Image (tube, rainbow, N blue to C red; front, side, top):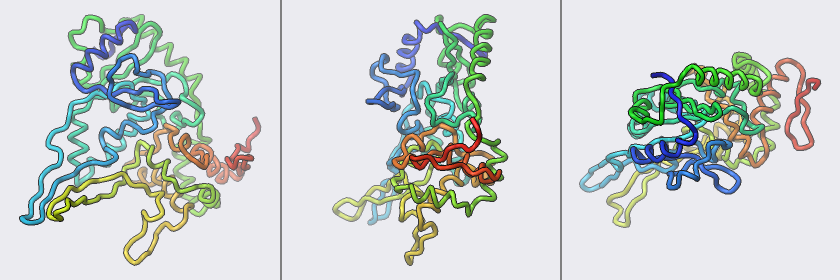
Length: 361
């Protein structure tokens, strides 16, 4: 069975079943935004939401993580975490699943990261496909992440009175096996799915004014563009853009000693290339002094460097960096400004300092 269906009236029954199989995490509202949290009350789960404040990568790659305990005399080390819990991430957007796929590439590169991979082994991902834009900041269509592209165990698609479930792994199949209220999708269900997908094509349009290949070529030629100076001038170096990005993976390590100074704990903590001291080395040399060079580096880490190394773009189109930017720097408009400069039709800045498209409407 590749596709199954579940009536919406039975969804809560299934969620209760899932919460009994493993620890269940899902999006829920927090003031005017959304967050992934452990599920205590099924009714709090939000199926329609703008991307959460932090992406679900926080469960694979925690903001602060214990690495190991150590003792100096006699010298000894021990794992800080011996076992990881089984858990299910429910209603994950396709852009965030793409972010996890990017991290898979990074943390599987030699030397492999055991903490990340052990958590990944314990996790099940149940995605939900967006059928309309979350808001104006998303650029998921241009990045090809507005549709499912693997990386999940089950994928939910709303077809009206039912959800279609695409079964993409053995783990996913085990979560529906033997449940009488989840049935194999019939011809009518598949026809409804086809209609939903056709309607979606009319809603999701390219947000960036060029193909990914064109964007890559533009980044290859515009390292010294004055656009970076403008972005750097507006940037306030808060680091929000990297903190919320589903594919940023930079971290620092820190040792916390006990009062005896003979034993302690080593942690790793998220770090950001947008921080002033990030690229400083011994002797005070700073390889990225200005905010313009730090912002440029962030963009190149999404649209060029990972393509060169992994043949994969590390922008997923989630829109979080734009949504959270205190200076209202828009990724879509920055990239489109570069594309416009490439074509010789520069975009003009608006009153708010955000570039406006120069083409006729």
